Length: 475
Image (cartoon, rainbow, N blue to C red; front, side):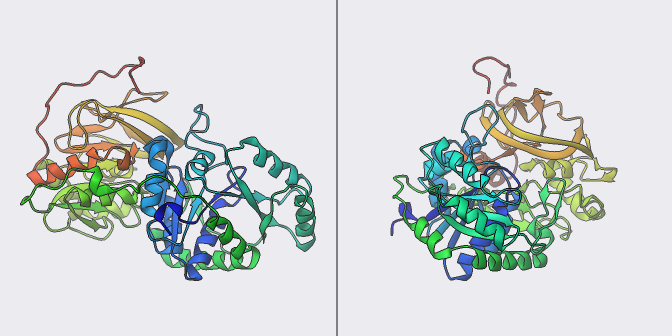
């Protein structure tokens, strides 16, 4: 079977809270335990669910986001991630037809399903309905003829009698019931201020949860019917995305500069394609854990600190004074440093009163307010990550604030309801709240690796600040 015809299903729901993650993760684990190579995918910018997907399948959890990467990249990125898989399962985001605010179907699960030409299985929270479930499913099945709603999994079913009523109602809908999961207190996954607690913080317990979900799904779902449905798909005409083709080939004889990438429980947010792009651009990617490691990896000449939960681990991060000093020393040397969200806070002077690396003249703190949304941005000056004028799309998701929110040389001009600039550029440091998917702008990885290979950040400023207005040409 060619890669373009990989069996695939999209697991969607009418709304958030219906149990998509429970069902999708359980299906991934159940099929993987049955001996299939399962490729896990998640619609949207979420970092946490893919961690559970990876635990369930043993393969990297990958995101499919039409806003961040463009609709034209969805199928190539999907095929790249699904290479060699027997089955690909795609967990949706929010409700089936919900996407980027005010932009129609853009970044919705429905758009991904149409681009991938994949059948959709709708997870319905049946806890407070019986016959009405058929009307709900009928509405979702008929709303967009381009979406193939091929089956339903009834979730949170109250009893055997309740299941009988639901199945009887669904007989007239024309959409088959492919599973029914009864309410249970088992396999619950703890949550906090940004959603589920990441796998890296509770690996043993998470593994037990995933196994329990697999058992529930095996008992309540028709796995042979779901697999047959997944196999009844057309071939995709697209070619798989190739990180090696996306970035310039490494300079011969330049060696492979070490680019350290923060990980561990405090820094769990990263797209799998980022490390692949850094490697393709010529870097030796070496992970490290700022909670545990007192030194940067030997020979570090570039640093990437992604998102995560530094606010949860602020005392421990602060207590690791040797590493904080090493990070500050690397930044002072002019080496390229890319920091997103959690990384931004780690580079600040302090977080909730705890000393951090002191690279940036700013202080962070937790708040009750959630900052969430897609952003469009432009690089205002040449820096270690982006050339001046580079336009990107990104995502913000945090309950912290930084004071000030931008430096004398901001990282980005942004479309935002309350601010026009954001982040910090200083020496080789690029730090921002904005999460960017580098597959949409591979030059970011290439530029960072080139700076690391040169032993210092690119010369600046190669050109002056870029005006950022609100006219037709602004993002």
